[in-house]
Structures are given as C-alpha cells and as structure tokens.
Image 1 (cartoon, rainbow, N blue to C red):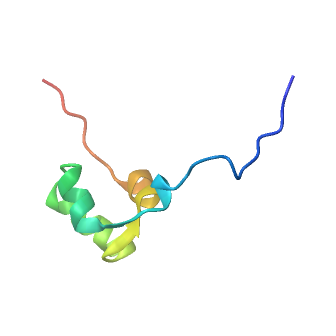
Image 2: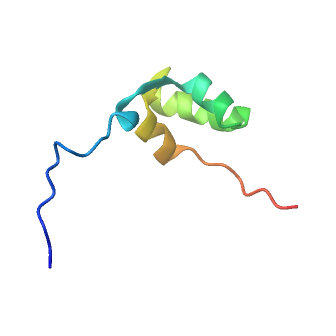
Amino acid sequence: MSSHIDTKQIENEGLRQVWSVRDFARRHRLDKEEEKRLLALFGSFATKQELLANAQRPCLFR
C-alpha cells in the first residue's frame, strides 16, 4: 500500500547550501585536476548537491 509524502516535510536544506568549489575540493581531498574540472564546470561556487553529483574520486586500493 502506498501513502502520500508531503514534500514540504522533506528536509533538503543541506543540499541547497552554496559551497566554494575550492573549499569542497579541499574538504573531500580531491586532486588538483578534479578541482580544475569542477571550477570549469561550475565556476567558483556551486550547490552541495551539484558538487556531490559531479565530483569524481579514483578508487583507493591497498
């Protein structure tokens, strides 16, 4: 059985935050090439949701 979800009750404030691309890259330990790519894609600022969706990190294996 399904139920109605009120979209006004869903919290999405964290995803709407505007971040500096350089700050995001530093906090998420992205390399300089990835930071440069995100800067070309978005400019100096983007929402957290956009950055999380577009950031690419290589897999780290032992």
